[in-house]
Image (cartoon, rainbow, N blue to C red; front, top):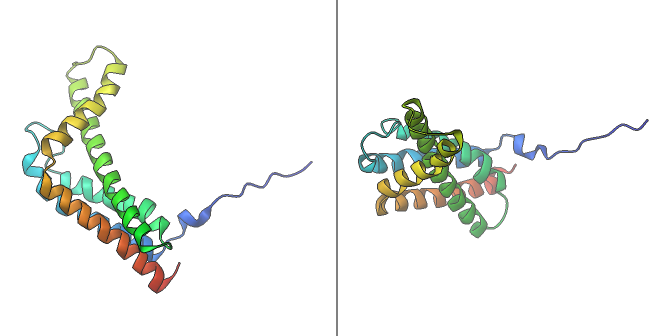
Length: 161
């Protein structure tokens, strides 16, 4: 009987300075962008006071798992990875806020069935995002995300894997 050998990419599990730099930079960017988004969030949205913590946490996670993982290529690719990470932070943050709003409405029995509640997560998140995003938070997040990608690439080139 032959044994099966499972080969997996363990590169994602190795801590590197590129991942650390990307996580810290994107986490700080999330906190700064959240401070600009918070005043524009509509009243009654759960999690508005903790938005800095939510965006900072998603920034740390996305910086480590997305931006820092792909270091070691060209500088242009690092900028693209950083911007992709910034978009992921926004999408995850507004999806999380949408899920919190859906749960709040579900506990008040506002939905007829489960499917309408689950699909309303996207609607709630999109409504919060459209109502609260302005030029300055997007510029802050974009510049910080580019900086996170460049810092990650710098750390990879300077300190290696």
